[in-house]
Length: 432
Image (tube, rainbow, N blue to C red; front, side, top):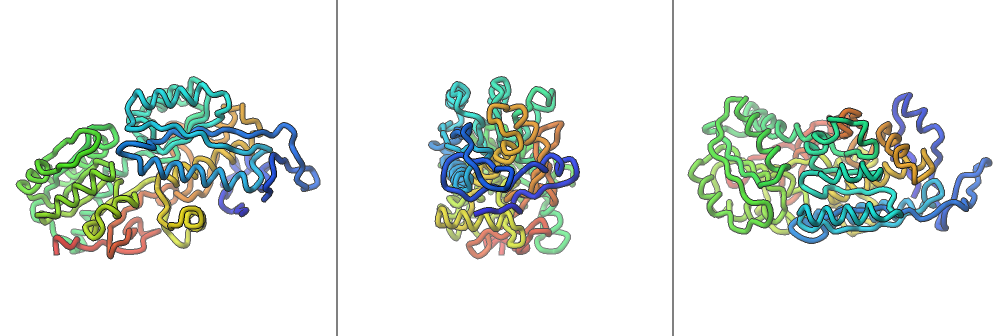
C-alpha cells in the first residue's frame, strides 16, 4: 500500500532536500530503481540490507521488546512489499538485551557493530544509560533510539558533531516532570477534585529514567507550594511485594501518588495491592499503563489510573499517519492497540528508509545521518523534526505531543492535550 502523504515534506530547506525523492513502487520482486521515463527498472547494484534491532526480548521488559520487534517487522514488511528503497530490500537481525544489564547490552552492541552487513540499528531503548551511543558513533553506524532522552542529550550536547549518525525520535523528557503537576492543579482549579493537604508521595525505581522523572516531579510540586510527604526507592527489576511502600503511603495519606517504576508487571502489582486499602489519592504511573499488558494484568482495577507518554501513537482519528498505522497494526497483529514501543521502531525504520532514499548508498552512514537530522516528517507519533544541538526530536503539541491518559470504562482515554483529547479527567472510583 503506497502512502505518499505519510511522509509529508516541510519548509524550503527540507523541500529542496526531498526534491529528488520518488514514490515507492508497489512491487513484490527484488531490487528496483526508478527509470528516467517513470518505469521501474532492475538495479543490478541493489542488495538486501540488514537492520539491527536492540530489544529486551526476555526479562522484566519483554513486553516492550515484543512491541519493538513487531514495529520493526511491520515497517520492513511494508517497505519490501513496495519494492524496497533505492534498489535495496531489508532484513531484520534482532539482538536480545535481556534485563538491560551492561554486559547484555555490550554483547548485543558488539554483535551488531562487528557485522558488516548491518547498516543501521534501531531500538526503543537498550541500556539504562545509553552508553551504547558512543559505540555506534565510533563505528559510524546509524543508530536511531527512543528512550532515556536525558541520557542521550547529556552525551550528545557536549559535541553534536561527534554523533552524525545518532538521532532520537523522542523529545526531551522535561515535560514528564511538569505536565502531571500542571494537570493536577488545573483539575483542582476547575473543581474536579479537591486536594486535602497539597501533598505528594513519590515512588521511584533505581534507574536513571525513573530517577530523573521523579526528581523533576518533586521539584515541580514543591515549586507550586506542595510538600513531598514521602519518597521510596525500589531496586531496578522485578518487585512483587509493595507492602512496605504502600504502608508508608497510607501513613502519609497524600493527595497525589506518583510511581515512576516503568516496568509493567511492577506497576500492575502496585495498583492491585494499593487498592486493597486505598488512600484518597490520585495515582499517576509513569509509562507502564501504556502497554496492553498492564490492563490484562489489572482489568477493572486500572479504572482511574493516570499515565502519559511522549513516544506512542497519537490516538486521534483525524491524524492520518496514526490512523493508518493503527489500521495496519490491526491487520498484522489482530489488535488496534498499537504498542508504543512498536510505534518507535516503526517510525525509526521509516525515517531511515527515507534518508536512504535520498542518499542512495547504504554504506554512506554519515550522509544518511545528515539526511535524518535535516528531515521533518509527519509520523504516527507526531511531527518529527530534530534539534541539532541535542539530536532529540522536538517536543510540543505541533511536534511530538506529551499525551496524558486515564483509564475510564476499561479504555485508555486521552485527556490532554486538547488538540487531540477524546475525553476529560474523572475522579477515580476509590475516591468517589
